[in-house]
Image 1 (cartoon, rainbow, N blue to C red):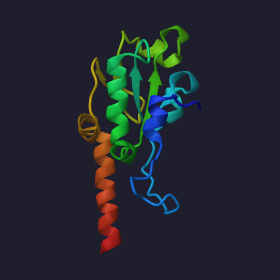
Image 2: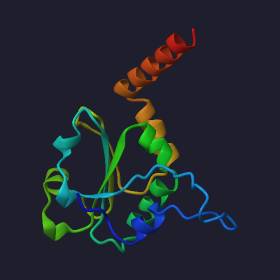
Image 3: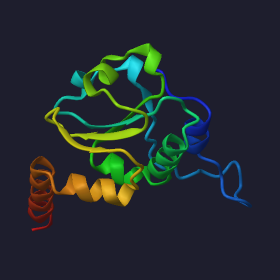
Image 4: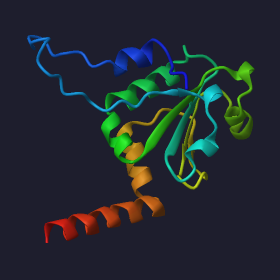
Length: 156
């Protein structure tokens, strides 16, 4: 699976803090590596991940750039919710995902693990809004309940 270059790569690289010894272990933050829509299918993630698909007609679209920056600045919360980030900025490529969803310009689409579209937005959303929406979904509610039950069982 090919990853999106430049802006995403720069955001994903862990850089030691100023004054930190380069030989000291660096605590890595989880990576939410954007995948190209041309390299994946939504079926690959069925019951495993929650695809978040970001469309634009060009990677230079300001909404696309803002959306990627918002998603990549707080990846931990998305990873905790089993999110996989898929991007498509080439309308001429005619990817299966683009053909299925038929975006017009910028579009953010959130899928459930069941493969159903749960939300479409024509403007960027921040991680707080996305995670709040995901946390309302029935399957996510079950995951939260199961995690609480498992924590209670292990502590008692």
